Image (cartoon, rainbow, N blue to C red; front, side, top):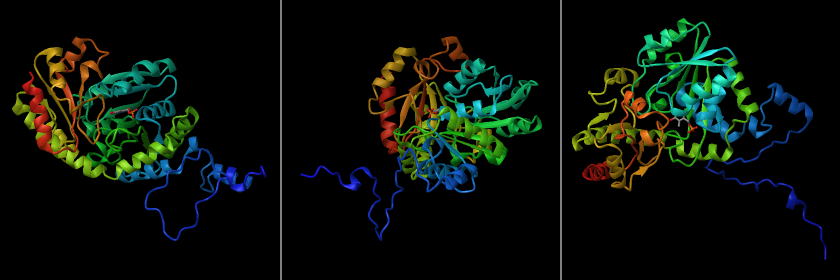
Length: 391
Ligand SMILES: *Cc1c(COP(=O)(O)O)cnc(C)c1O
């Protein structure tokens, strides 16, 4: 009995030659790539030949995904990271030095706020938070050490709209790096590079991928030296994203424009419905009663997005009754899923603040944020009517 193992048991074999081609982007999980000889490997590293080497430094599924987002943002050379937060990390640690100062919007995504207020100080990087709906407030926060401004176009969860044109002018006049987290707005509604942003960040996890089953981030920089510094930080700190998640996200993105348009259409109708049902307050940039309605119209095209926030009376007990009465609406602290999700700032994103701190931002125990999905609008209206009936 021969104990020899066949050649191809251990050796990787290619697929059989086929005259027809697969229609789906291949998933390439290879961690490492074999080059023909040291000369070729040298030319890969010095950039005279293109080839993958080790997947922490890049892989084809990341390239394919990045190029799709680049095309929407109107840029080149975007980089894929493991999460939206690793994109924020790569930008901060890649572009800032000890002694630098960064200005952040005062209603940034919770973890981005913590990055500025709790992580960066440990590296000797200081910050100020300022109201991005007022470009003068941003300008007033500039110090001689300021290097960067980090803003989101639409704030979470109060949906205030930043004065992007004003902020871009100030960043340019003072030679500051303008970083825009475009997760909420997406390039369907807003393209930060068009108004002079230097760096654009996304949590792909949210609307772009859109199915809550892949976690990734994206970062693109206009200046080649910024891109190089950010890429170096991604590779050295190990912030790169996995091929599987990139492959899943690319699949999700194929329907991004359709999902976005439908969700936005639903959001506008749902916002009015919530007001009709008796919400104490409804926040949707598309409603004339929104404090930034005019700016949203001018800035976003008008694309008012899929996010709606609202407030009910009655404190935590009413909030509990409300979510329990709508078990088919996922009560979950995320956004951008194909299905509608409902979140509650006081028990999740803003739980770190005192009740007084939340009140200052207009977030009582009755404050909810809805990430509207693509369901039939009549189903959504019925679900929320059940919630209000329980109050
Ligand atoms: C979710 C989110 C992030 C972080 O993204 P993750 O993929 O969860 O790490 C950053 N910015 C904004 C605006 C977000 O909504």
